[in-house]
Length: 161
Image 1 (spheres, rainbow, N blue to C red):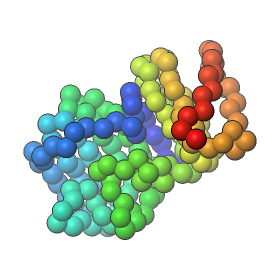
Image 2 (image 1 turned 180 degrees about the vertical axis):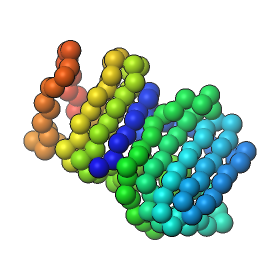
Image 3 (image 1 turned 90 degrees about the vertical axis):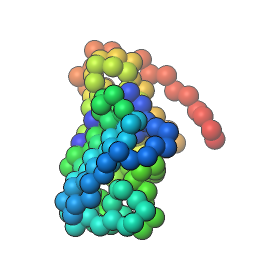
Image 4 (image 1 turned 135 degrees about the horizontal axis):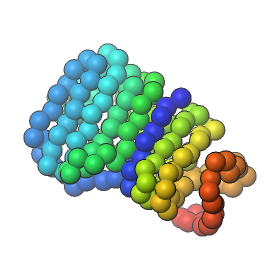
């Protein structure tokens, strides 16, 4: 079970291509820093190649992304994800969707966040603000149970089918 903290666009945060100011590659942790973002990760037996800053092998246990102003966009802790050949931790939402494919706990901030739901029995605490839950499955594959919420104003939209 992973714990995911989301701020703003969360897993959908993107930054333009930028050159590294610094990067660190260790067997248990690493980081990449540029003028527009900073990523940090921990893991077990992490391995790297000569063209990527992020690990290309090993088991990923945490991952976080901050924007150029140092504001955390998302973090994943408590993961146990075996990095697969072809995974690109620098730019693939699909990789993170596989990392959080189990029964996970999602939390937001006092702002407005964008959450993504794929599979599993996830729990969400969006905090204050106008939060959006993006669901990738057809409606008969999920249910929404309201617990500990002051209000819930669902709005369902079908897009891109």
